[in-house]
Image (cartoon, rainbow, N blue to C red; front, side, top):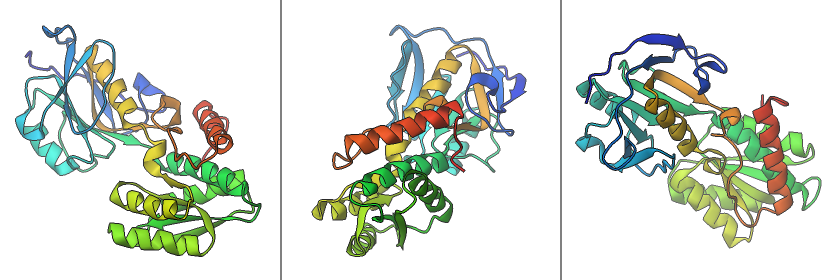
Length: 289
C-alpha cells in the first residue's frame, strides 16, 4: 500500500469538509488507493458495523489482525479509544475511525472519532415518548431508566415537554447491571409511567423486558442513532483520499441522528411525529437545546 502523505487541509467547522463539525478535527488528503481485485475500495471493519456503500468492499476483521486497508472502521462497543489509538500508532500508514465515540486525549494523527450527537437523539426520543404518552392522557408519565446521565435525561425531558407539556418525566437511576435496570423500569411503571426510556446495551434490553411484561412500550437511545451512516460518509471520503484526525461530529443534518425502527407498541402517529421533528432538526428549523 502506498505510504499515506498527510497534508493538513482544513479544520472541520459547521458544514466544513462535508461531514460534521468539530474545531479540533483535521483532514488529510492522499492519493486514492486503487480498487481491489474484488471490484471496490476495501475498508476494514471491526465490530457489528454495516457499511453498505456502492464501490466500497468491507472486510470484517478483529482489531488484532489489521490488514493493509487504507481505512479501518471500529465500532466503539467493540474497542475503546485507548485500544484503537494503540493499534493506530502501530500502523501509521493506515487511518482508523472509531465509530460512536470521542478520541479526545488520544494523540494519533491517523485516528478519528466519529461522534454522534446523542443529546439530539435523546431529544428526538423525548418527542416520540411524549407523543406516545399523550395518547393515553394529557398528564401521563414517562420514565428514564438506568445510570445517572443528567445531560441526556434533560435533553429527553425537553423533547417530552416540547411534544406534550403536561407529561411528567420520572428519573429512575440505577447501576447499569441488567437486573438493576429492570428493577428501575418496574419501579417507574409502578409509578404509572406509560413509556420507558433507557440509554442502550443490556440495560436498555432489561428495561424493555420489564416494560413488555406490562404491555408498555420501551425506547432506547440507539433507536435514534445510526453509526453506520457516519461510517459510510467517512468511507466514501476515503475513496477520494480524504481522511480525518480528531473528533468529527455527526448530527441530524448528516442523517446519523434520526428516528429508526421503534418498539411496535409505539404508535404510527407518535413515530411519524418523531420523524417530523427529526426533519426539523436536520433542516435547522428547531434546536434541541
